[in-house]
Image 1 (cartoon, rainbow, N blue to C red):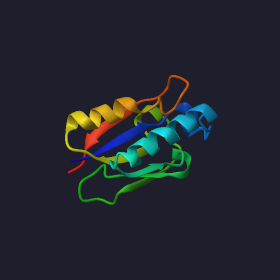
Image 2 (image 1 turned 60 degrees about the horizontal axis):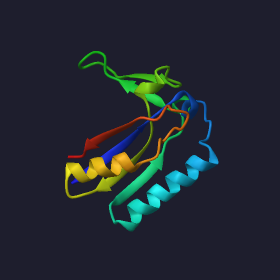
Image 3 (image 1 turned 180 degrees about the vertical axis):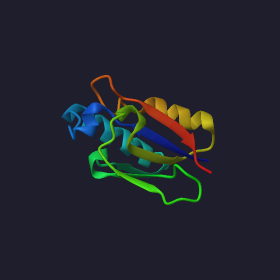
Image 4 (image 1 turned 90 degrees about the vertical axis):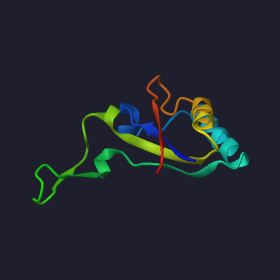
Length: 116
């Protein structure tokens, strides 16, 4: 079963502020554990939304609307993701629970979603 751990953005990640050296070390260790266990498929961070665009489809059949970032609701944005291949939803939850606070500063939030 393939799951995506979606790391939600924060004010710090959106401002381009890097995590503390301690958090960077903890995340590196976590990723090494995922690799060693043979469950990590891919892990990537994303640039702040100030470098992104949003394409929306407000009216069926009409041209999409392109909006350049930054986007104001950081809690609605994604800062990065990890794809894991595991045997069950329970195992995916266990791995998600082991992730250090991905934003630090008490701002971290992870969304776990199964991939079709």
